[in-house]
Amino acid sequence: MSTVSAVVIAHGAGEAAHLRQSLPALQPQVDELVVIANTPGSLGEVPDGVRVIHNQEPLGYAENANLGIDATAADYVIVSNTDVVPEPDCVATLVEFVDAHPRCGIAGPKLLNPDGSIQASRRRFPTIANTLVRRSPLRRLFPPLDWQRRHYMLDEQVEEPMQVDTMLGAFLLCRRTMLDELGGWDPKYRLYIEDIDLTYRAMKAGWERWWVPRAVAQHEWQRESDRRLLSQKSWWHTRSMVRFLRKHPERLRALR
Image (cartoon, rainbow, N blue to C red; front, side, top):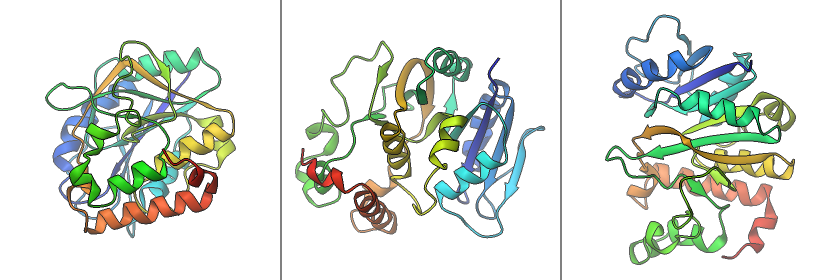
């Protein structure tokens, strides 16, 4: 039977409240659970049996993902945000699906907003047009979730598993053999776009990415980079997108 590790990345102070909900929900579903405490004050008390890695200095999200992956040994590795609470059979459902699809390298659950509505976690790979709208004042005239329905796959069916380009990286189950082949997450992304880069490299290497709606988790999506156009996190998002385009210049030809 396949084994599953989980890595939860706590990036800053104030995430202890999320962990009080997410860790008890996730721990019974996995074989080992590691929490990365990226900064002092990231954690409160954690359940017995959860291993904590305290960073001596803050690392980027992708670096922390790799740190957790290297500290675990299961066949599959879940990389999760602190604010994702999986339903009781979420992980087992993902594992069952990936076991049955040997070229599935990455699988993600259906994410729900706190009000129970479906979150726009399925995505197509970014294009120049949707990136310019999202990262400029144009987003006030053309709200992305209203005007980029194709990019966010808002009109696609939601009952059956489907192959997708990429998914919101809040809760992803990754096959370890794929991670080994790809060399893990790209640590040069500080924050944002590292999940798109991982799925894009997986696509190039012939690995499938599947959205599995029978697996369900609740996600308190912060969307911090979208709240203000001129903010530190918005700047990090822009820098990360520039890195993605420099790594994969063929995406410059994808206008729409």
